[in-house]
Length: 290
Image: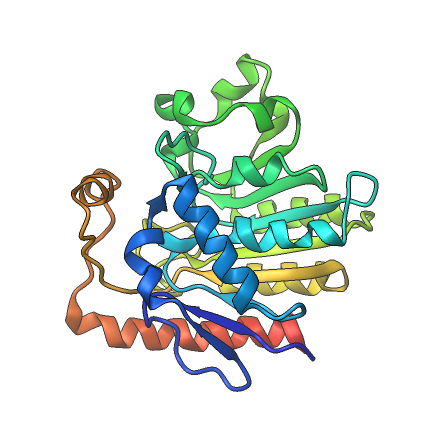
């Protein structure tokens, strides 16, 4: 059994038995939220030197680091190709496919994944964010949607406008989380393609766990049911969505972070909420490894 990896950017991931911890705290301020492509490439070299060839689920801390999933997926290029492709399945309350002109951002990385030759399709499950509503449609990157490489699976947001401009195939809307997961798993039932699974816990309801970002509607069992159904095909996975308090040293990052209106975290709640996160991580890791 391959051991989990903790990429320790922000000290938010608790101790996990048999996990290998990679100390990347010195990269937190550079990488967190977003970074230049040059900085991203430099960190890619750090990962190549730090990660073993084979490993289990990678835990990366706050969802502010979700763009690191791109680097983990890129590592699979040596095993897969356009003739032997994989799918990428992402649980996230946001599309992570937004325009970002200054490099790579935790909300922009999905379009890069969709452009990889060995990725046949990307599914983002559980979106309730108005990032995919008509008021923000111009902020999305359209190429993967138009080319049928990316599908948004959403709840509680009006996406009827997409059908009117010929993008109905890329915007799937459901009345309940149960309907969303049932439809996704039904469509996946006959697929044999390997899957990379990325989980941002902001897809979950605040009744389940608290994160750094506005949150979705899913329950823990939606994640567990999906893992159980596609587990024989999972060839890699990561988990983000931990809680940590951060003040960027860079004024531009402070500005962008304030524009995204991330909810503030009370220090009094932080430890209790991190403990909830830790228990959920153990549950997810058990489902992914047993």
